[in-house]
Length: 378
Ligand SMILES: *Cc1c(COP(=O)(O)O)cnc(C)c1O
Image (tube, rainbow, N blue to C red):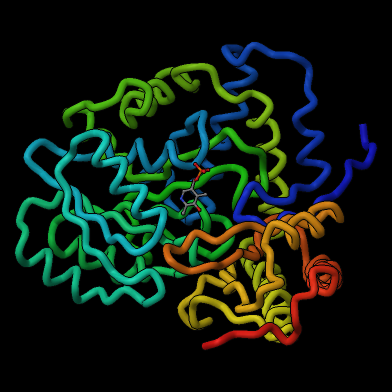
């Protein structure tokens, strides 16, 4: 089973390009996931997911869910709010807005600190807010706002949360297993990710990594969801080694292979590769005179949000389709009031793929009659 599958270069923010070995890992004999053999795959996987963020598996655990990454936002926010407490969300991008939406849907009390989506968050604002509120259960922040590429200062924010007796939840879906994260020095109590992003697996498997002591304590917190309760899924895993309900079987086999490849590449080497990809992306942006929505020094280095040029010939759909037909996928932006598209440095690709991409992209621009260097009024 080693036939080559057509290789597409996905420059969207996940799912990302996978290796053929990960793709083929899904082709396995049919198995009932209630067999011991299957639980035997998930137990080491849960430890590996904690190891990626350098947690001690006695203190930290990971809880797997069948769903896209948003399930982890839902699960952590709704399961971890103690009676009489409120949530505090730093809202500075589309994913932290989603977190606020989740809290709204559950009718849970929260305060949002709004901060511009294209500027570095100032942690002293959090300090001031926490000085005024005495009932904050947890502080929540997106690590990497994938819509804009903004990287948030989680270490500082986590430290301030702890100083005020709150715990710290961070959405690391688009940074986990890419940017090195250490739950200890980064002051993280809970983080999360999804198999189709950092580990370069398939969609349908997501995980919360968090402190056992808080999860145990949350047994007595008010319940808001049956399927998306963290303690419930954790307790079932601890008791049986299995997910409470049917797991995404083939996706888990793919994740097992993806983790083997993750540890073989290594945290540092992998982060270097992502940086190499981004350097190639930025070189093309500069060469063609495009501009980004955010200054580079506040970006994650995993997503470039490129501004649409002020050129009547610019047509994102047309450029997208030209690239797509040639195996390269680019993605619309997610910044309110700003026309942007995104180029992301995720997945099993390298700088050479980006060089190929820029040739195709230039062809698409010429085809559409878009001027280069790109024209901007401001
Ligand atoms: C991708 C992503 C998610 C999950 O999105 P889904 O569409 O549910 O997979 C959550 N948070 C961040 C920051 C992300 O980049």
